[in-house]
Amino acid sequence: MPNAPRHPEYQYLDLMQDILDHGKRQEDKGTGAVTQSVFGRQIRFDLAEGFPLLTTKKVFWKGVVEELAWFLSGQSNIKYLVDRKVHIWDDYPYRIYRERAEKGELSPLGKDEFVAKIAADDVFAKEHGELPRIYGELWRRWPARDGRTVDQVRWLVNDLRKDPDAHNAIVTSWNPEYLYEMAKPEEACRFPICHNMYQANVKEGRLSLQLYQRSADIFLGVPFNIASYALLTIILARATGNEPGEFVHTFGDVHIYENHAAAVKEQLAREPRPFPTLALDPAVTDIDHFRPEHAVLAGYDPHPAIKAELTAAGGIVTDSWKKFVKGEDRGGTPQA
Image (cartoon, rainbow, N blue to C red; front, side):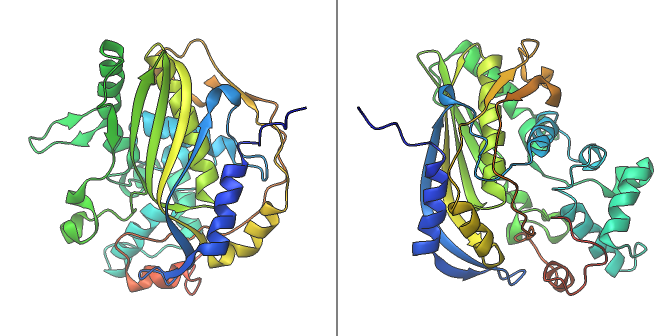
């Protein structure tokens, strides 16, 4: 009797073990966070074999679908997410607020106070909940030099509808004009773009998508990224009249944070369970139709969640923010 095929989730688990075994120590100069890191890896999932929502720990599915809807709608204000109890982006607008408060331009607020005010005060949220040059804006409203905006996702869908053999269906979020020391100081993005480019490709009526992620937190971020871009693959396939193919995840620097090591080992001791299936509502025939409730999971039976703290590393960082990330000046309860 032939051996059963190896569960696709082992690609992810093997990558974590690879980092533990072969990763090199690195330290983020902005926050002091220490990681073990490898460079240049790839995993891939055939979406005909189930939806790759990892099972060796429970993944925050509501956060996945709400965030993707936020991106696809072109929004860049966190109020949409805060109102839906999704707090994965709170740190970054708060970083901007703190910088202005330190200059005396605004009244100091702790992080919890800041988030509560985003939820309760629409005027405050409109001004201070904005996270400029983030994925939704760059996917759907890329700022062109002549003042217009470019909708990259709409272009991708329209191009693949006209020419399924196209090799240029790429969406990028890497805009040097607003990144790191390449930017004017007042325009530098306070969030470091991580999953920075993806390409769709059609072969024999199946649309596959490859993501290049320049920097990846394997424990907290990557399970989320896998699910998000697998769902995006399914949506783009539907919008272009194709079946879903593969989601291919290519990494630059992929790492384990020092304070995640025990959690990683706990996850590695678990056996994967069958992947769930995902049904996309037939009403979704275009990218602008998608709403979180349109993606329906069935058969998701994961192991329990494993908690770990998010490190808001990367980007242009002040000394004050470095202290905040290290827990020396939290100003409120950190969001895990």
